Length: 465
Ligand code: FCB
Image 1 (cartoon, rainbow, N blue to C red):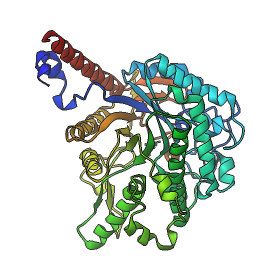
Image 2 (spheres, protein in one colour; image 1 turned 180 degrees about the vertical axis):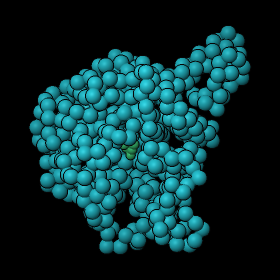
Image 3 (cartoon, helix red, strand yellow; image 1 turned 60 degrees about the vertical axis):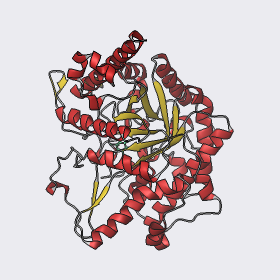
Image 4 (cartoon, rainbow, N blue to C red; image 1 turned 60 degrees about the horizontal axis):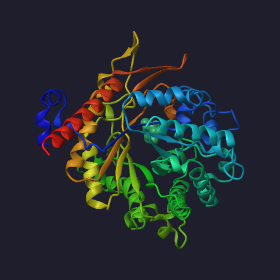
């Protein structure tokens, strides 16, 4: 740190709390269904999100993912865009139905070729490739046979994982199995507001078990097949707080915390399902076969955490965010950056964390494109504060390896459609024109400053040898 005093000009523009280690991985993230489009081209099969978009009322603006950001046809341009930001890494997902249209059996060479070009394009630009296998878009053919509620989908997923690793593995920096299994289970199968739109707590819990089991089995199979890159899973986590100190609110918070965090983290780290949550579930608890828990608890090469907000829990009238003292994003999510530091410190205290990444963090704001600029000061503030929280956790010893902004581009925000914009790059959906928002320019500057600080520190070190 002393060396930094040698470069006062840089220090005057960069808060020391925002200086990260030279090997810290800065990235941007997307997912296949949200950006690719080309839904019926080059042999892609139908996914559950294609189908769900056609359910009347399911998507707020009645939109679908047929075109999205047309990324499938704009791959090279979008890769240039990523490189232009000065980040080191790109997190993306593979559309299962593009590479294996029926979710089992035949592979689609054109689909595999697309991701081959993506991974090669990242390598050619000096960017790391962080691949997620399942960012929610299960092939519809598998849903027709029971989807994640059916145990045989676990085996389909393992075959899919092996096929993807076989074709793309060499070019990857890391691989994660599932994105946010809680969302797939609860929003897709309990609340029914995401694909496949099922409303059954028992089904949701069975789904969560199959997701975890398929994660563990895939990791084990990948290792046996010689895949040696860091592999793990991405969880959506948040601090949960009771709305009031009343015992009912506190008790409910404990269970919700169990369902969101401990239900996933405990079995992943070999502790089985949390007893209190299991008892609370009663008849809704999943069927777990002998050996399943051992299979789930594979050593993790990395852990991804997606963080957006906190969750305030009430046993009675639901907590009203509009009465919150905290500012809200365009999703009506409370902006609570210290929650990210709290969360990371708690995880570090409670679990033997592997290399940990914030694999998603960002905010939707009511951006306006005016004269070729988007002055998204609120997003810059959001990012600055959350990055600061990661830095704080890092300095407290949490093994933070990287931070990825959600998202590279404005994109299809699931049940909210295209109305909610999370990108640091604006997308005009009429023309598909991409425009760097001020937040993208800010990020680029932050990363340039980081690089300059590290270069100055290195030079200083050499000069004094
Ligand atoms: C996360 C999803 C991601 C995006 C953000 C806003 O839950 O993983 O695809 O929609 O929320």
